[in-house]
Amino acid sequence: MNGPRFPVWRPLRTWIDEPFGGHVPGQVAIRVDGARRPGLSFGHVARCVILAEAIRARGGESTFLMAEDEEGMLFVRQRGFTVLPLTGPANRLENTARLVDDLGARWIIVDLPYPELDIHALEAWNDSGARVIFIDDARFVFPRVTAVLNSSVRAAAAARLAPGNGVRLFLGPEHFILGNVPVARGPRAAGDPSILLTFGGSDPTRLTPRVVAALAAGNWGLARFTVVLGPGYGEAGELLRLTAGDERFDFVRAPACLLTEMLRHDLLVCAGGRTMQECLALGMPFLPVASTHSEAEEIAALAELGWVQRGLGIWNAEAFTATLAGFILDAYPCREHYPAEP
Image 1 (cartoon, rainbow, N blue to C red):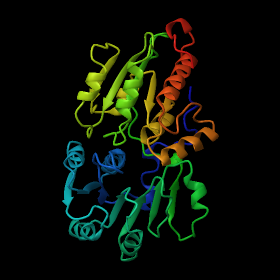
Image 2: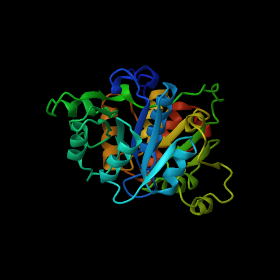
Image 3: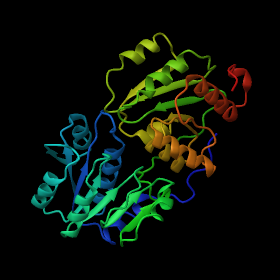
Image 4: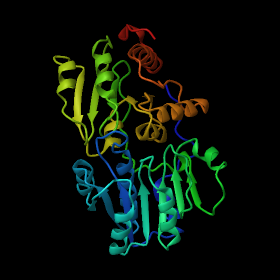
């Protein structure tokens, strides 16, 4: 079973004012995308919605500037925020600057994963009088903007190698952006574990069918599996074929609150990104499976700190089933229910 919750995690409401210099402004622009395409899913836009909700709770409003990906824009609009679509390459910032000026927003949050993003344009934008908050994950770049947020456990070490430029830094799991935490239900009966599988809003690396296929082929005793299909996940026909007639599997499409769904279960199987950090912040048992090289590095770094005891840095069906079997046996030691041995 994985280790204790982040000992340093701070609820967002206790620090949301700090990146803005102590007071949330009345109008904020947010440049972010969400879609089912390589290099992009829904983690970035999900945390920006959480930020926008926290800004609204302080009396401010946020407008989202997004590439024309219908599923990403719909995700934001369904949560009550205005979206202005952008045309042209998603990594270019020229149109964004014009729209921000039209909005009269002095502050802009930029949360884009594109490796070709023009960092110098962000710096020039900030130098021109805008106030830019840059959110990063695995690039570990620290542009000369107003503030940089990066919740990776590796971020602080990377920042020590960056030149000092007066940027306000909000680094490490202390600043993981987590929404309002619902009340967890009571513990379930031992010997009947409920396991949740969730691999992001669109699962662009297709971990979901690989994990489901491995589980469907095994004997897991009384365990039941709930599979979350995010808002950008495609057709579920392949998954339904893999689990045809198998009553151990249920499917949930785009739950209104993923945290609530997570807390209904005993164990989680997830990728090595945002959901893994949610599990750590909530103190939930989980098994991470890396979907990218960067996620593998993050899992390894957390393992060194003792916050992850079991995890996979690369997909392998045999290693996965053995690891999960050991995970279940640790949590539910009544071995007669689980004939699979780690």
